Amino acid sequence: MSLLVVVGNCQAESTRKLLMSTGHFSGERIAPVHELEAPDMGWFLDLVARADVLVTQPIRDGYRGLPVGTGQLRALLRRGARHVVVPVLRFDGLMPYQAIIRDPDEPSLNPPVVPYHDLRTLCLAAGAAPAPAPSRDALRRAAAMSVEQIRVRERAHGTVVVSDYLERSPVWHTVNHPDNATLTAMAARVLQALGLPGEPVPPDYEMLGGLDAPVDPAAAAALGVDVAGRGEWRDRKAGPIDAAEIAAAQLEFYRQRPALVAHGLARHAERIAKLGLLP
Image 1 (spheres, rainbow, N blue to C red):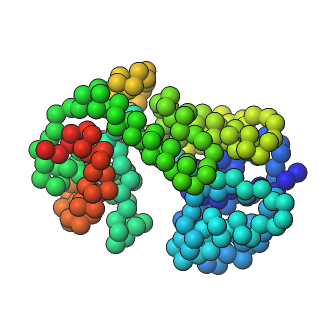
Image 2: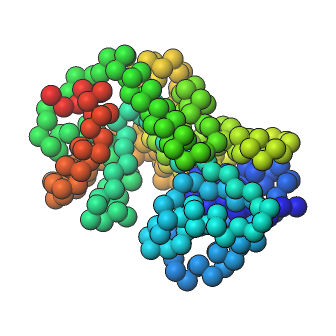
């Protein structure tokens, strides 16, 4: 049985579970790469050096001051070991206003209530008036842009291809927490890249389903997706989360951080423009 090591964000452990379900591999859980610390490097780098198969997301060399970059880990592999790169999955086609924004001064800082930003709230914080609802064509263009961004990253990093699957507009939990079906499709592509038979078997629970964001009904209609029961934020343990509470808390959060607002507007300028959120 081949020793498998999977390195990346929260999607990595789900990918490992799916690959392990085929019976081809042995392996163990590794914390998301942003949680690894210097004291972890001994056992972690030793594990990579012993791996028969290394699966990584694209990670820059020296990430957080540690030797965990994709190129650095690949250089540790013994002769004959295999390496497959998978993309960092994000898809906002059905959640067109949801965004991830990292504060340049404090990258680990999340907004209050839920760890995601809403571009409509961000634009309100910048002084914009509420924008009219985007057209169906605008929503389709925004979704296509999301798929194209993944496609560009696939080509840039030589990853397995998942962008064609995203063209089906899968219903995710949040913009960076895919459903089991998407993760299973990606794991199957990894098996194909390795030339191994079999199909990954997902568990009977949604691996990244701890928090569900609402699916935008207009986006779902524009993309031809029939979604029921996804009209509100819902924590798997705590239950529904009030949207008004999120907006109020995050507006105050932005009021205290004008530099973050400016950064977010610049970071997501193309999507904001496609959705017509700013004049």
